[in-house]
Length: 77
Image 1 (cartoon, rainbow, N blue to C red):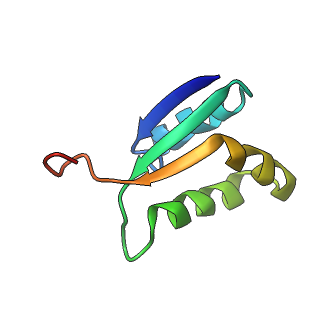
Image 2 (image 1 turned 30 degrees about the vertical axis):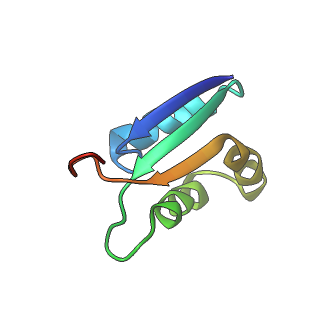
C-alpha cells in the first residue's frame, strides 16, 4: 500500500491529484486541511466526495482516506 500526504487537497489541483491517486486501489491518501469558514476539514473533504463520486464509491474510497486538521502556515504545524 502506498501512503501519500496531500496538502491543499480541497483546491483545484490538489483535488484533481487526489482523485487520480484514489483511482489506484493501492493508494491511501492523507489530507492535511485547515478549517475554513466554520467548516471542519472532514466536512470540506466530504463535500467534494459527494460532488464528484457516486454514493457507493464514496463508501469504498473513504476507507483509503484520512483527513488531518492542520495549517502549513503555522509554525510547528
